[in-house]
Image 1 (tube, rainbow, N blue to C red):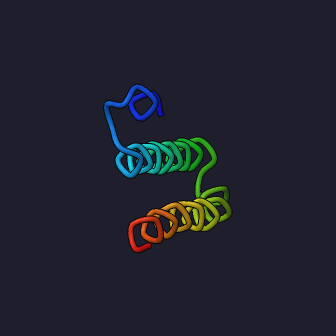
Image 2: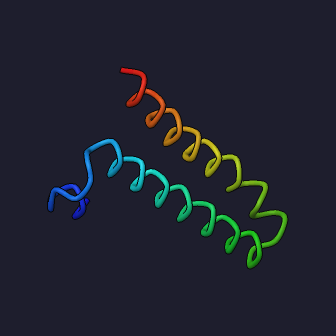
Length: 66
């Protein structure tokens, strides 16, 4: 966000960076939760996290298609 506000990156590039950071954060949190919580927790959270990442990807794709 700061790169865009400082004029060093355009809005689509900043949005892509934010989407990548959000996705990476979700994947890392899911992996940590699976490692600590085991298979039972993984079966509950992985689908939800996958939907969130898919939503981020879909929003990013819509941003570039418009």
